[in-house]
Image (cartoon, rainbow, N blue to C red; front, side, top):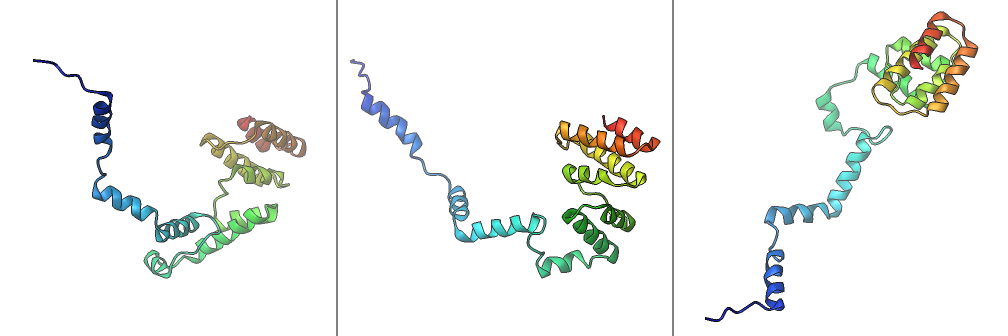
Length: 166
């Protein structure tokens, strides 16, 4: 018996047979659906829903969530005002409503310029919590702002909060 070796052509054909298998029907349907215009429009609307200042919830979703309380409306309004124009007055208004400070560390860092030492302590403690949770902030900018706070305030609580951040 003669042992016949396969030619290169036969070897290549055997390799390409495995690659020419069709994907299963579910995979084809997923690929087809993801390429449609309706799917891309759905995804863009969903992205807008979850971006700040984006689209509002549809009426059917608002009904399921229930009405927002007056307190939460006031907190949201105060937070939006503070985000647009960070100032000491708007910071006081937000804290009076019981709202929490923003999670953007750069915005919080701009709030350390307040003149009231109690507000500065609250802002510095919140900033420390954000940094501890992994928020990234420019170290030279943080050091510069902390030095400015020390130059402006000589209150013991402010100094302790600055030292805790350093």
